Structure formats: C-alpha cells, structure tokens
Length: 425
Image (cartoon, rainbow, N blue to C red; front, top):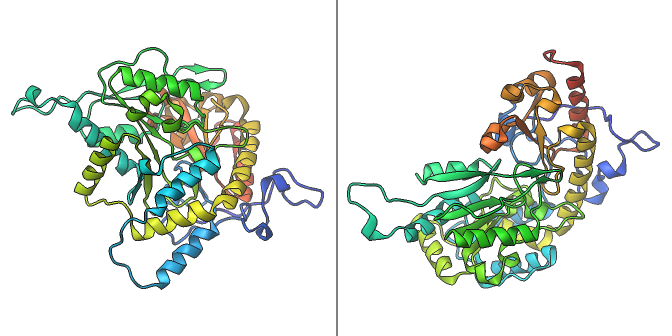
C-alpha cells in the first residue's frame, strides 16, 4: 500500500528540486511532497489498487498526513485510561459556530448544532427516516401494504451514496439531470416534481468539485419548499473550497422563510483527513425537527458526543486551521498541474475539494470501459462515472489529494494515453 517511489518530473526551481508551489517542506510543519506510507493501516483506498504499482485515485480519501494537532490530541487522550461512556461537551457546539464564523464568515446558532458519533452517511439515513415518518398520513396506510413514501430527489451525476442510502431504506428516489454549461454544471431549473420528501445535494458538488452559487442554492431551497421537501445539503467538502471561491453554507444562505426546511450535514472527516473515525455534525435550525432527529438517532444507540469523536472534532476545529490552509494551497497547485495536462478532458474545473471529473472519450478511453482501460494503460485506479448515476456514464473521477512526488508519477503515466491503447507492462 506504499505509493511507488518517483523521480520528480514537474516544475522545478534552479536547484532541480520541486517548486515551492508544489510542496511544503517538513520545516514548515506540514510535508505534502514526500510519499506517505499507508502500509499496515488497513487503508480501503489502497486495497482498491488490486496489485503492486497501481496508484489508487478512486476513493475520496487523501494520501497525505493528517493534522499534527489531531495526532497529539489522540495520543494525549489515550494516555488517560478512562475509556467509558462519555457525555456531550456543549462547548463543541460553540466550536462549530466559531469555525463557521472564522472560515466562512457566517453566523450559525450553536443551538442548531447536533454533534454526532457517526458518519454523515449514517446521519443522512436516520434523517431521512425521521422526515419520512412525518410525510405519511396514517389513514392512507393499508395494513397489508408498505407505507407510500413520497420520493427523494437528487441530481445526477451525484455522489452514489445518496442512491445507496435510499435503496437501503427502501425509499423511492428520482434522479434529476444537472444541466451543463461552459462553466460546468448548473442546479436544476424550474419547479421540482412534487410532492417529495427531501431534496439531497452535495455542496460543493461531488464528483465535479463545483461550488454552487448562493443564488442558485436559494432558488433550489424555494423550489424544494414548493414541493413540500426538506433540502439536505451534504457539505462535507465545503471547508475544502479553493482560494478565490466562497462556499455558501445552506442554512445561512437560503431565505429565512425556508430555513426551517433546510439541514446542513458536515464533518471534520473529509476536511482533516480523518474519515476513519466516524463523526459528523448537523445544522438543524427547526427545533422540532432537531428534537425528532435526536430521538431517532438515540433509537439506534447514537447519542451526541463520543470519546474519540469529540477528541478529534475539538482538536481539528481548535487547532487545525494552519494545516488546512497549507493543504488548500497544495490542492490548488495539484489541481492546476492536472487540469493543464488534461485540458478539454476536464468536464468542470474544480473549485473545491480534490476531485477531478473527466470525459473518458476526450482522454482516448472507451466510455463503456474507461476505468479498466485507465488501469491497464496507466496503472491508475479511478472511480467509474456510472457510480454517480445515469449522468455519469462515460466519465471518470480522479482524486488528486496526493503527495507532490506521487503526482509527478501520475502526470508521467498519463503521458501513456498519448501513445494509444497499448497495455501497460
């Protein structure tokens, strides 16, 4: 699971070393250039590689060392051998509110915050069950029939977890094609089909890294309200907005009249590369929905707080800012190197996160088997576009959150695409 050694082939300074734009030295405290050894850690991302020498770029997981502050906090807490049940530290809600004020310039009421000892996907599943239980009129349910759930709506292409959660909950869903323009995808226009239980949205967009404009988000919240739906904005990539772009936090961006019908889900997992420790926080302005959501979570044994989860959340939100700033500079440089190399194959220039959405045909790959072809020709593993719904067919998603030295290797291997369809040795 160790990234292969590489000789830098990217931009260099006069000494022959990688350029400062592409790396940070260990003296700066954060080394995002050197290979990061993940062997022996049970990495699911590297398990996808399948064979030695393959560089996995499919799973949305960074091959970069996490924040030192989180490592210190975990080590410090582990030394105290009290590992029993914990209660929720209410200061965590203030930390979340302070984070949104400092990073996004918006005011989040601490009372809106639920601190969850589970990942965002689990939180979404329970939230949908909470909402659906309220949209069914008991008098319409026949004893011999399944409850008539109104559908859940979400755009396509879109993170496949939305469809997976709906299928697991046996909830009908409908995928709405995202219109595309010269600047990338746009949010759906016109009225939404209703009635609907919820509208789900990844913001920023997964897989393209598009930051949705604030006015589009406000309009979508209004259309969701007209359809009788709750707008659920999954913002786990929202803190990874690249320099020059502003992420609109759904609950503070929408019209105040619609705020009670909006929920934002977020987590330190993607932001600080600690998704292996499941945690999340939900911003739920409607106090009645917040209470019902909390009760539904408790029914699954999920209460606010958690020993390890709180340790990580507090350290990341209190002390992780400098690491995140350095990470964003590294990601922006990596994005530029890849988009310059791949040119028109990039369907939408990323504005956030570390995901690149590519047109397989423009890469010279067969659209129906692009993932396999990229693996065979270049030794690079990607996510197949079909994993993101009907709108994703013929596309690939690459994760470029890699050390600078490994990105050099990736760029060199992509050169094999110019040589035609020969199979890699």
